[in-house]
Image 1 (cartoon, rainbow, N blue to C red):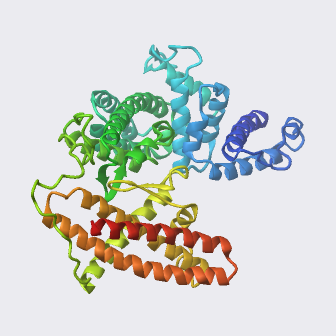
Image 2 (image 1 turned 30 degrees about the vertical axis):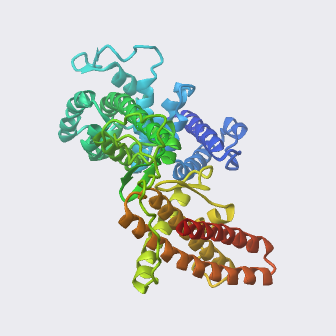
Length: 494
């Protein structure tokens, strides 16, 4: 507690106001104020000043638990009053107990103050210590003045040594020329560990004044390289789409599609704390690295029929269908009985497809969930099918769970049928491959027949239970499945 309680309350009131505005914007609604801490009550707090301070400290502890460093980072904009930022840093440095979240918030506020001086160019010249002997940066002098009435910890010698590592790291940052190298360098984790090593000394003006310029240099380099990487990825995705493709690459077992990249909002990602978003940044880096391995896409002859680009193949697109050789007798398809082994292998494929669709639907932007990008085509889902893939009640022994499982199964079978049909188109010139795909479609016809029968039973249950909307959802999916199956029969009969 400082000697002047009114000054202390003024600092805390500024922090409370900032927090309440932050949460109001975040929640899009007003936040109830703790009784006795309204603006008017604070201004009139004279006789019970210390009691009001106690309430305010407890109130801010509660708000601290609700507010993450990333939220503070987004709330600190060019419109933020420096007085508010100075109140925040005073508040964090005065706390008797501190957490990793407090340290990260202090780091962000100090960096904000360095990035936005009251006078342009204020931090560019170096000054001298209060005793006239030690060279100090203007920013450190400013922090000493801001935190003059705080109990600044003494810097142990080992922490002084740690501070000397930041200048070489800052120089290293400027040398990176691409996003992949920066991510793979381990620099972000190394700096994170350094900051944690300071413990309570982190709140010393000298430490904050050393780390803030590094943060600004790193942020500028990171943002520039990240935007460049995303720009190249989006250009590549556009080229793939123009050639008729949809899959860019496979990262960690998940196909990355043109739609994924189109939905990527790099500015939103950059608002998240670097450490929190590190896994996302690594996935972008992996995708960029995979794309860099691919040869540059060449434009195909505009009169040719485009096929899938194969994630960046330089070969010109070929017609999907190849005419039979003159005089050659057409090959007649003779189906063979479907075996249990074929059904077992197909079940494994259906499980993988169903899981891939489920992952996409659950993580995709709600605006794009109904269109699932597959290898050669886009799979359109009904709202009921989307809901089923997002459901967490599928293990229940209930009608809604049975309907959900039916819809999942139907969508997966339709996706597999369409995939094999697309593969069939692409192997017209190869009799053995065509026969292989045709056999796979025969297996899928058997699977579709079973799925249609099971769906019919669930449809009757929904009708009998008075669930007209659910019954209609099942009927719509069954209709799509029947249409796909009938198209397969016609295709194989040609």
